[in-house]
Amino acid sequence: MLGFAAAVFFLIITPGPGVLSTAGVGAGFGFRAGARYVTGLFLGNNLVAVMVVSGLAALVLADPRIRIVLFALSFGYLTYLALRIAFAGARLAFIEKTQAPGVWGGILLQIINPKAYAVSTALFTGFAFLPGSYLTEVALKFVIMNAIWVPIHLAWLWAGVSVHRLNLSPRSHRVINIAMASSMMLVVILAIIAQV
Image (tube, rainbow, N blue to C red; front, side, top):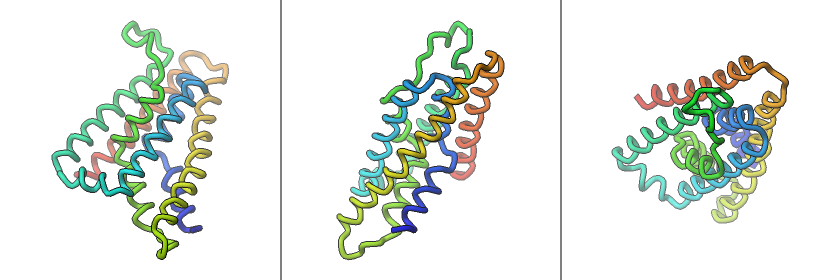
């Protein structure tokens, strides 16, 4: 069980689209918007885990055409989200009224986030600690995973909100937002390279 908890911690805390976008939304839009977004990520993460545990994800992702479509959607949405974070608070006419991604944005990100599927698959198909009771093990894994997932994402949100609360010049704030968005895009590019 400790091995599973350690795996959850290290797989979730490493920068991926979820935690980077959480910090970015916090930095670009503040705590309330970030909390709504994290709620969506939480719901989406558990939905992905249920899909993995039930075998639905394996069934759907067995078709390479569906994997390509989901990967393209993931790339497109993460690029869109990175741009929204990069230009949060900017005075450009076409994005001035941009709102933070809310609950549905978080759910959508997790559903099309390749890392969410990879992490859930690794966690729920490995690290057996109750071989005699699969259902109890799965239930405990959900409890442990969420008990670690929530504080990690709240810490990333706090980091982003801390940047948001600093009395920075608009230029400095924009530079930080662009750096966070660029980090997200770097993760996306690394995922593309891993797929090739």
